[in-house]
Length: 329
Image 1: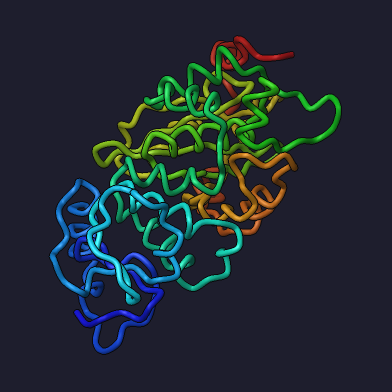
Image 2: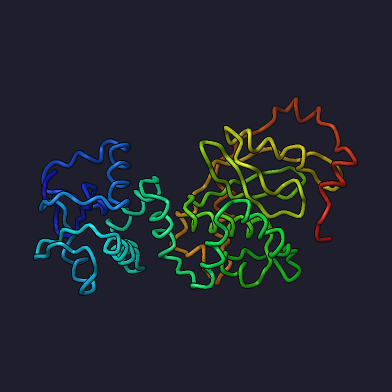
């Protein structure tokens, strides 16, 4: 690996920021190699003592005196191995004025690929959103998906939007203690993110009925979901589903309108909310209409053939009644 230009950064054998190297640069061609290198750095592996492990002088000048892990500094950069130093640089590169910088964009891209440990992944994505300490205490306490669902069910009321349509950020949900399905999914995604999961939304499309949004997660290769709904059957799913289609089909019999019609028809791919970091989706005070608008534009996969749709029966009365238990009428 050759020397990087001044704004580049290589930590523990890994390039963090998207700067063109001087000469050939090959280690990042293999994703498994990249993930292994980053994991070693995050877990505290000592960087190789080499001039190639350096951070650009512009970022170096921002490091406070005495920050742990700074090995050597000169006008070309610094060799370092401390996570404290790494976290400071993460914060510096995610400042708003850096958002259009090539280095900033590639660093976020690497983060979205899942190249960092859960601990550092959560710090990366929390940095631009800047939750208050009291908010983080609550979110970090929801360290299991089932706890997030229980919090949504027991501590967050159902938002019937009597004063007009809303799309609250997770911060506003925490403050107002109310959420509809979109707001609940955003809150669940933020809580999952704080605790090391990527913030993923899955969108359902229905006929003659409202659409629905879930926050989805994977554990040991299986999908689960957290959701806020006025219908009991459209909420939590344990991570036992091998594919997204399996997960989606578990909602089919519980997705119905007040006429008893089974209405679920299509589902989207998972959408990573990191793409909305610039609007501060976790902490914005404004309604986040950009997110549901985006969900409405992406492709959705059909669940049924036209023949299947024609043969659908109406809901069983007992299942209909069970789904309405606890609804906010």
